[in-house]
Length: 237
Image (cartoon, rainbow, N blue to C red; front, side):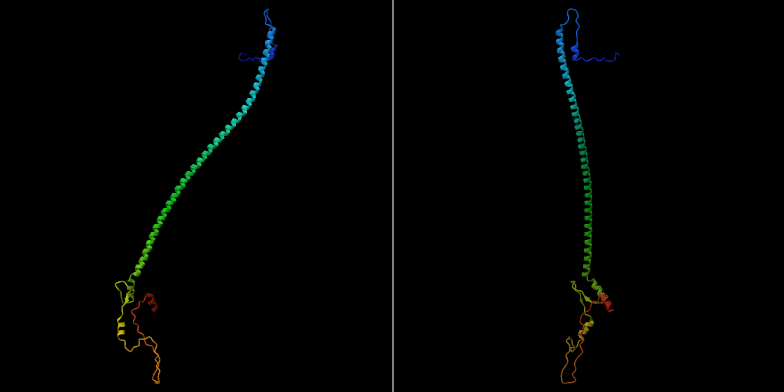
């Protein structure tokens, strides 16, 4: 068929060596010259074929080396790619950790700030409450002190027990006023009355009319009015 390519047989050194040329007419080629040239062509062509074969073998070996080197290069490239991907992934993870830490630190800082503000507010409030309570206690204590310094309670007791007292204008201790009975008792005392608290001694002598005095004189109470408190009054009743 016309579309098929015919395969041309390659020329070998033996083909060149065995090639014979036909002589035509009286003017043909010199046989020795042709044979010598063909021998030289055979030798050179054989050497060329040997070199070509050697080169082909070298090319095959080199191709094997290239394939091995290419495999190593591909392996190194894959390792480099994996390393780059690992570095990129590590960078992304590290950046994510840093971002999360910063966000958490910001959240913690805000929380600590809020807690600090709450503590400051509570401390201020407690300080105000303590100050108010202290003022209240001081006010109560001062009120009690004022009540103790006031003579109103003494006036009330005097009115309740019908006791007459003299209250000095300088605020000193009140002085009990003497009653008329006490004054009359002092004015009516006889010069012979015994006011001494000494015990009487027995009289000695030859007269049987002399007797020992055993009676003790009654002592007069010249003190003023006594303050009787409600509890004492209950005990007397």
